[in-house]
Image (tube, rainbow, N blue to C red):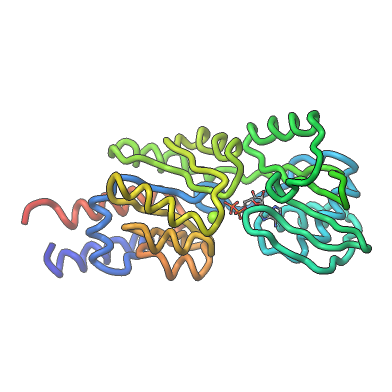
Length: 286
Ligand code: ADP
Ligand code: MG
């Protein structure tokens, strides 16, 4: 494409709320074979809500909130909001620790408390009935965290983040172009599968630790160029490694800096619009 065509292309993008940092990025979009999406905040709204509490509601929620007060994770915000709504008494926690991809731990009133997934509670004994409940909640697209006090599991909290209204259409558009769609998430496999099914995603890679997202993108690059769409701090390495990094405008600054394209409207349908724009700008007549 001529410099003029490039300027027209990026200018058109900007008008649609698709910020393209340079012409090279716009050209790379043309050759993309696979589009990889982060889940939370990218495919889903990013405002998770507590839907179910198993165990003594006040005790489970109060303990979880004491720990999550120290966390920046979207799951923490959901738990704190519900604790506020239900006016539970939140105690302060000491020695707070966040364990990446697993959960949080701290001391409350001299007791050890944990909130997280099976990986964090590896040494706890799980009640089979509770695990069956966990599975059912996960199959309904709800993320489940266990709450442990000393060596006992005292309950669990289910948290749901709904898919954005336009995600399904956005993914259908990409598939209609012959592109493969993949979801890459730190969340549990069952939850990820349930969300993927709702929006029509082809392939799911779940239980991914934040540091491993970029490696998965590299593996997918074996079969052609990859675009990665994400919003979080932990998405920055994947956004950088991908042939095209696409950040949500609502994302963290780190993600926006790492992306070659920024979707100002946070609408996933703009991924397909960026592809169309690239096709137009780099039409094969040379
Ligand atoms: P994602 O951003 O894709 O949800 P993360 O790696 O941040 O992935 O989290 C993966 C999993 O780790 C969560 O689904 C949850 O089970 C657990 N986890 C992480 N942070 C917390 C937290 N603050 N409280 C409870 N669980 C957490
Ligand atoms: Mg995210």
